[in-house]
Image (cartoon, rainbow, N blue to C red; front, top):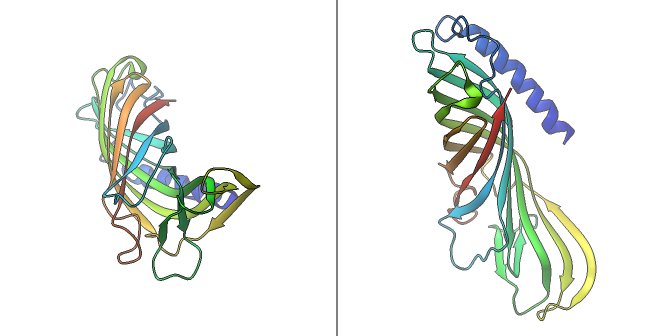
Length: 240
């Protein structure tokens, strides 16, 4: 976690420098400076894997939780349009149903094994954390009152994987009887693509909006895992 915080702070500094260099093209319109315009984004949504084979069973509420700090650079010629750039962290959590997911052992590919007829973890999830740099083209119907107006944003996010781990809780029999009550966490990024690229969209009113993302490149490296691409639909709380 300390490593993630340090990277986020560094990225925000670099974003600030970039924002200052672009003020000759994109700048806040006189009279709108200092007003809130989605400098802080908090997102929570349902996440799934496009292309997931039927042999991989999921359950529960797989979800994403994202936090971003962004600069809003308004077009001088049209105050209704702006570009948002920034940095933050995105996390995904996928829950599995009676599966054995092995990302740490020296196998040739990531293992997703059916464990319904043998011992397994009662609760098992795969969690990833990515340092991300989002960019959005934003439209605000009434930029002078950003917290009371219709908004649309289309964008792109580039990310660097900083953590991938599985977490299993309570070792049970094939019938569900608890054998050992303990928690096991295994971390490895070996099978995962180190970078991810996502298309993004938001639409809403005021500080609330609905967002969607789709990962353009596979979650796992080619030949080392299934060709799955995470997508998320959820809610955004914005402001500042």
